[in-house]
Length: 195
View 1: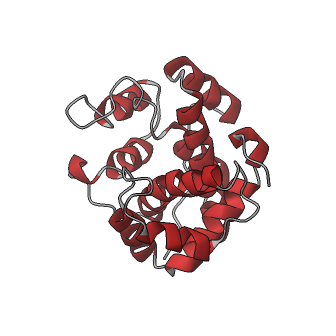
View 2: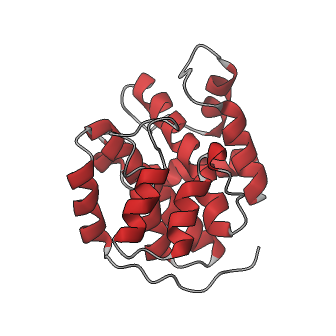
């Protein structure tokens, strides 16, 4: 996978988080967005991409989800429009759009593929950690894969999206899960999880 050029964003990380806090009241949704930020930072580092930009795009990817939680309600279209209005470049809003299959935006760039791959998996890893006593300590690729087979567990998480995301990135599923777990461990306390 070739690297892309630097992405210039109109906000720094602290400003991006302030925007998130203006849009999102739910602590659970904020934590999800923080988890995706950490996972995107880890992938940018791994792929030699612009770390801060990728992390910020991961942080704001669900900006509209609380008020527009479905395709019919406008997610992620409202969020992408809001980001463009704030001065985010086209590749950022395109990545946000591409994390929803129904948007019609085909994932092409490493940024788009990473965002899609990290989004569902972060939510699923968080759910696994919650049943393990709000701890990432005993969460590993094997325990996540085992829970993925349990269709009654975290029913809202589409397992096929997790698998497709790893495939699109060209990363073995076990490795992808481990990268995301390690990224989430790096900010465990911010997520309300022990490590």
